[in-house]
Length: 193
Image: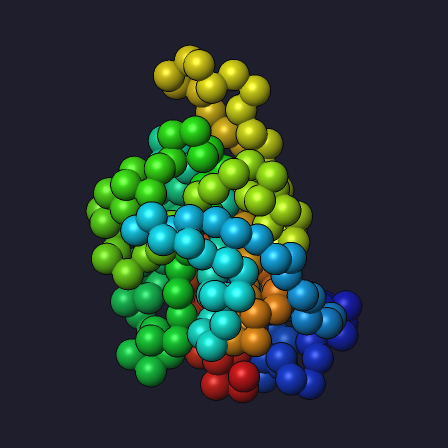
């Protein structure tokens, strides 16, 4: 527990160290710059890593044909946002970054995300750009080697990255998600800026 408390910097502190365990939240000792990437969002519009500013972002890698992790994560994120006060909720943006660009077109992402929440965003693009962002966020995935079969799977992390309003990686939310503790921790985190 002392190791986790030492990870909290003054500008990114959670009031009680126990909150880290209750929320399954891991705070980085220092903010980490993100690589510059060029992707496409669910509307087909250009999206660069410069757009990850002026709000808090919760990003995770997944894919629209995912049988378990992605539907669970998106459902949990919808529940989490519904638990948060509007002043906190309005400062958060959930983004699914595709680990399967062969199937995840902007239209496929838009349709898929609309089943969960209208304001969830999706990103897709060229594999080298997706892998660069994956590495920068510390969220690994293994792309499919054979995309010619219709039911291939993609291995990906179930963790989420937290990006702050200045566009830097601040930490990770580890699976399984602990929504009650996470709700409290995110409120403290956003209030502390």
